Length: 176
Image 1: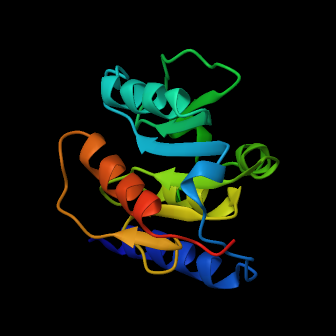
Image 2: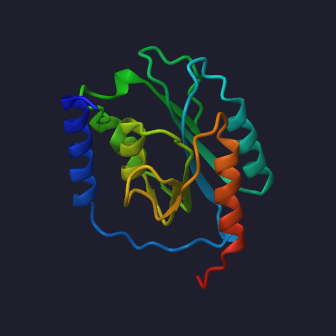
Image 3: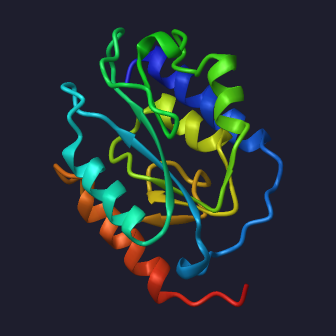
């Protein structure tokens, strides 16, 4: 890791520590209505596994919102009301998201955020940090970013991580 990457990571960790405490509630899967999926996109922006995950969630009567990131200037994915694809134009040289992007992410509140990012990606870590939700789940990359972390090897598809997160959300019973 070069010095610039270290500076970027320290700035993010500093921002993470500054965040106020949230009222975290483990969700009952049946009561979850709105889900934000955060994911790292493939370069071609096809994301067939993300589309399948979205379809599965919608079949379970969940309203799904998508937030992806691809390390390109020109993003090709269509922007739908429930979907947003971020690119390198949406961040600065320190990989922090632009203020207007952060404002747009923070204006909605979700019952659940499922972060399907499998490798460290600072723009998506900032997105997960500033997105409002009662509960955040994802792969363990940074301590304290999610309320529930899964530790598993990097997969080619987002589906195994999603399946593990949903399995635990359905298995663990909450008193809420």
